[in-house]
Image 1 (spheres, rainbow, N blue to C red):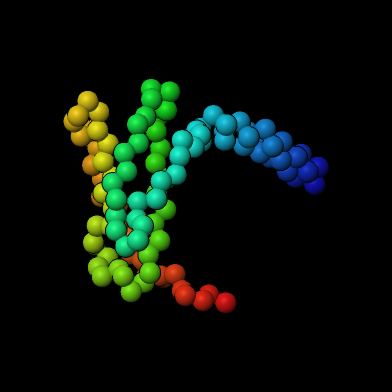
Image 2: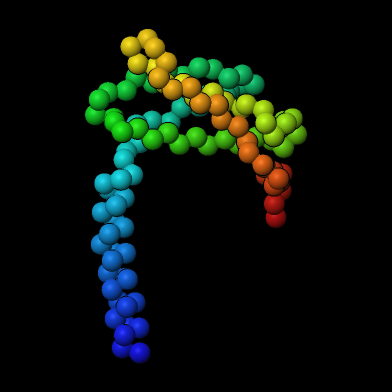
Length: 107
């Protein structure tokens, strides 16, 4: 029983110390939020980045009405990154196996 207590205590201390350290060192910081779909149209967004922004992690939040998704393999958004006028990354984003679309009223 004492062993279990010490094990739980050490796990709690590890989480209390390591989790904040990992979040401050590995999660980075937010440089902005951009809306790319307004009033029924997509609009391109150009975000200038500085060297201090590296490494970069992009989080994309896609929400769609269920009746608007025609095909599971349809490209929804293309993310491109360029440096010096040349494309360094081009990645297509799509809904993958969205069997459970958001309900209009989930209550």
